[in-house]
Image 1 (cartoon, rainbow, N blue to C red):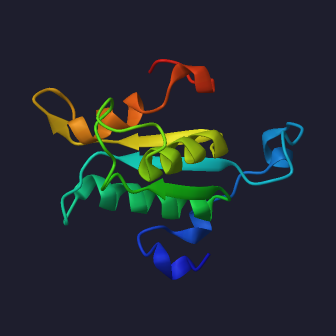
Image 2 (image 1 turned 180 degrees about the vertical axis):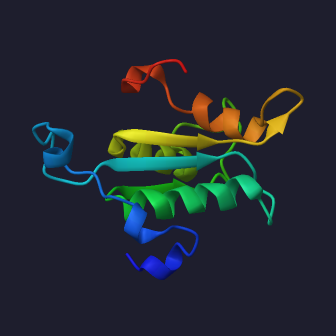
Length: 130
């Protein structure tokens, strides 16, 4: 990753983690797989911008990241499970080993866009309730 993508990070102070430094055995042979979700479809979405920045930081620290774009995701129970955006989301959920969730606050709660993403992932896939 190019360090110029993180101009506000002092690379000298950003010590990369490793199993040796942490005193643990490596749990896998691949980088951690992190899925990032955001809860706004606005063109200038601050939750999306924050999510993209989080992805850059995670990549800098050795993670493999993917960001799900919620535009076009139907409401739960409004489309079949075979809908392409539903399938994309479910495949990314299965791929991920960790997740970062970022949603604007709407009336004291997460947005409907964000809630729809959570609702499309059935607990039968091995998930747990947040």
